[in-house]
Length: 167
Ligand SMILES: [Zn+2]
Image (cartoon, rainbow, N blue to C red; front, side):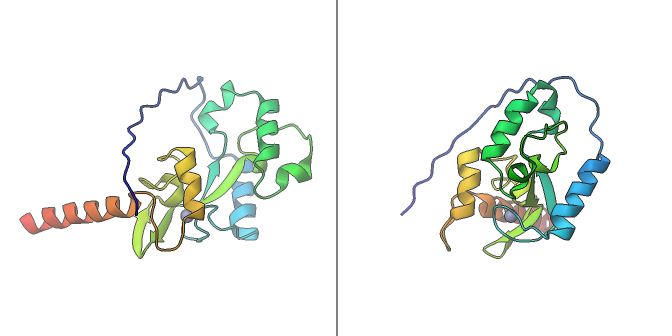
């Protein structure tokens, strides 16, 4: 048995002024290492579809963050062990390997393709859910679903089919 609970959230964030984000050489190098060389799967579902690299501490917030406190957090959330390995080496950019997490940019849940996957997907991605719901997806029992990701895609498909049949 399950029961559904709707949680509508309005998030206000004060972003510090920052330059237009560009993909740094450091980011490209680290993405290559994580995805191509180490072949790490999506942290949530373990698939390897259209892998993307997520910044644990957002690029756009970096100017408001204390790098020492960031490092303290990364010592506790260290999925690949890089922070442990690098010890107290200061962290100077959000593109540092210790701040990156591999997520899928597309995945299939119960045979339904979910665009954006566990990075940007509606009702699936780290940018679209609160942390407790997002991380719980990693541990969900086979055959159970805790979000509306699949329903969302099915609704979109139905809408698109509706539109094309109107023509
Ligand atoms: Zn995934």
